[in-house]
Image 1 (spheres, rainbow, N blue to C red):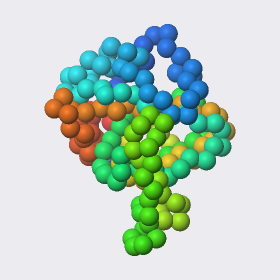
Image 2 (image 1 turned 30 degrees about the vertical axis):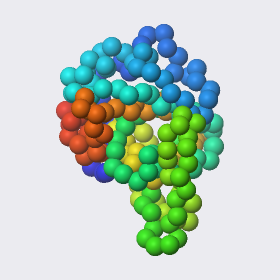
Image 3 (image 1 turned 135 degrees about the vertical axis):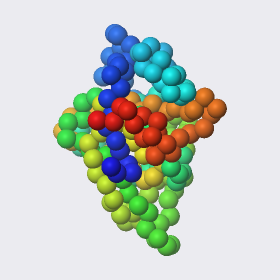
Image 4 (image 1 turned 90 degrees about the vertical axis):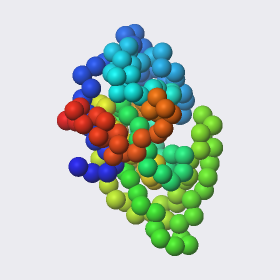
Length: 180
């Protein structure tokens, strides 16, 4: 096991019938839970989780993706489903110690915050293709190396019902019976 990504099999459809996951053309957008299949919503409810929203990231083949940490440096997870994206991989990075690591805080297209890191201020620590779905670590610096196909990432942002974000290890523990 690594501390960045774990493929799971939830045994349930992700999206409602009739929703075309390839229909999103904006680089970064939000969908509400109305596009999530009711069986998946029930499974998440049984785990005492609630969906906040779905982030959709659309990338063109070979597009450069900035190294960033969601909501600043932390330990948090998301559930990702990937459509397309042949030969793309997700990379995780560790900030270098000292003055050379000066991330820049940015506000995203959906008004969330992220810290962006220059490539010379981080070291690559893990690379992996993302499954359908995967639990991913989103609070540490990461990016995508795009392959030769367009890629749509549907990233489920969730909290516990008492509004806590789960760490990666807590999420792995909660979903342990679904790990492939």
